[in-house]
Length: 416
Image 1: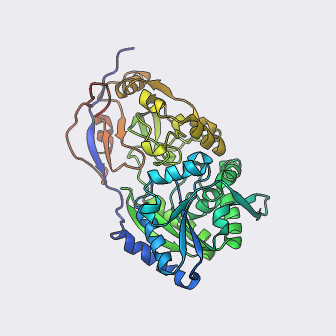
Image 2: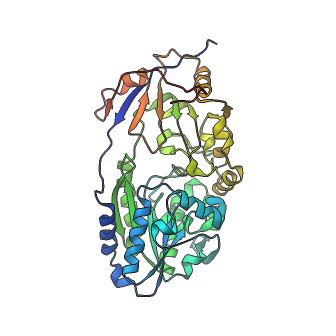
């Protein structure tokens, strides 16, 4: 087999639907006012505000605005870590994850608490136990804040959003373990079943749904009343999917991902972007990618490499950042063990890319279909090989922003 040669890469910009909030703080206050919190909040009550483990645009500002607003009404707001088994399932780990996202007492101007203790609120008609964060259960009110988007492990009327924040996020490790044990075919329905019990038995004041555009910017902040949360979220999920960034192809030889991590996606890389699901018995979607090379694990993932099994190749520096205890706890809780399989480990970025090409038969540089991305959230600016550019150049939302150039590496063989 001949030694592979690297293709030239062309910088390309994808222009996704641009729906953007101009003033996030003002929009958040407006959403809170439309929730009629002035009618629901009594002076002196304690309100739990959900704080999750995802990298959501403007999340410190969004949470701080909620805390300030509740203080103005005379309430005591408390940010509660709502992340299932993430952060290793410990208070210290949860607070570390939140701090990495900018969610600290100083940033949100109120107390931030973690904890794995739960209370059981009862059972659903199908026999599922309804677990709920013990601290939040002791509060006088709960304000749910989360981004709504397509999930990376299952699909249905409810996926990632306000309901999942209550069911899995505030379910702590116990609730997360039960939820993921059901298998992907039952998860959306389980969200609705458990969510309805929580809404009936907990003092949920309402929710604010965060929608993001293809640039990972805040597209909308939508107030959702408790009695309409489930049905309203189903509508908002459809709206959010229309804003979801995608790769501009249906098939690809090689995808080069500069970084993956839990702060980027629950599976490190968004399965809706890469097409790989990594769940036994669940077929992959589009695009169909022959090889995925991941160069680094994000700092915000804190060593949690859940989803690395979706890659074929990783670098040595990626491997050295893995916290196997955190990775395996997250993966075993989710039960999707294929996602924690170790990819082939090579020393440098150059080694990873050349080896991936070699396993493809060392295609001619002008024929290999390759794309390089920062991560699966940041898809507006990408680099594509000439063969891909010839395929996509007629699309109305793509534009080349420079000439084709060979990939540049530093002295250690890492991409510049």
